[in-house]
Image 1 (spheres, rainbow, N blue to C red):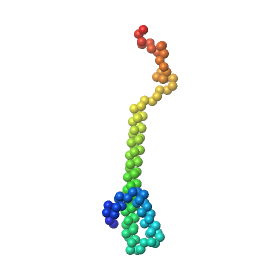
Image 2 (image 1 turned 45 degrees about the horizontal axis):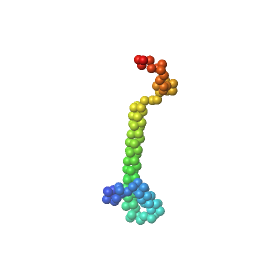
Image 3 (image 1 turned 180 degrees about the vertical axis):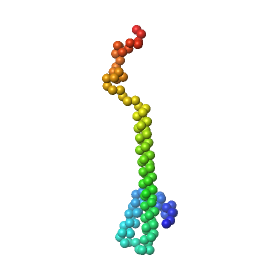
Length: 105
């Protein structure tokens, strides 16, 4: 099997690799491939499949990292932001002259 970089497989997008893989499979299933070409086609299919798997794994890692970062940001912002006081507590009611006993006049 040849190297991905020499066949241009690594440069394919996920959808391009999947499209080509499906094309190879259709040719194999449709008996369009000569026995002499079968090995090359199966090798190409294996390369395409590996590229697709790598791209999926990379996407999974990226999504996991994004979710973890969001969870960390949410946890950090929740700890830094005090909860709003309940209605009726002294912090939510306006001060009245009786509440200002410490003013000397």
